[in-house]
Length: 324
Image (cartoon, rainbow, N blue to C red; front, side):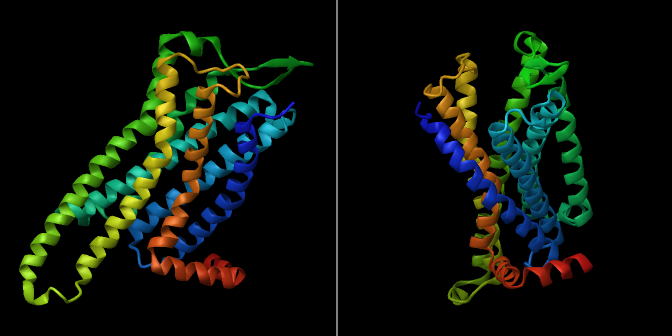
């Protein structure tokens, strides 16, 4: 029997994504941790946090769940207790990746739009507190997932597999929680990022117009380092936020359509359009976990220089980082 096309795509896509995404995020963490990319300590903290969350998504959601658990269905990963924790970390790490991106957008918004508040908020310590609070909240919000699954089968008194409990599908409280979980990631982040980014860009455009008027026409052909820095800030902010929204939008749309039409389960029909659309949404969603590294390499000159140095002498650079 010929395997369905979407399953063939998954068999190729996820191993390729894991082989690129895991090393790419590790390299990003190492480079940004050195602090030689010309970025402030506050921005570096957010970027390291985003890379760490993306690495966790690659490990738990892609490598453990989509590759190992799928291709080795009768390994210890299929034990119900282990399976529950894998699903728990799947939800939690996705929440981390999303809300760290929102935190970065909010940081840029505060730094550019509220100069008076900037000195109090814009610090490495504040960034660490925000990241820690977002991490705790993400893991606490996913705790109900540990109690929403039951064993698929019991063999020799050993529980195997995970399937949603009947209560999860019928009780209003569970339905409300599922909708809240789905809407909070990533619908609310979409709204927040669109709001923060639009206000940030508006502020930058107004400031640039005023700066050009103050400098006068005589300096039109002269370079302006301040305006160049603002331009780079817009590029970095929009490439990170824009790629996130574009890669997650398919998953958001498919979730809404399947839930509204009550077609969540397809019972092995791999040619069902809803199933194909849902799986394509997952493919793009997980692809976003390694896109930031490509964005940094494309938009940050000093990041590219550090990347070249790391590729030339990875052992010596890692040793210097550990000593530091």
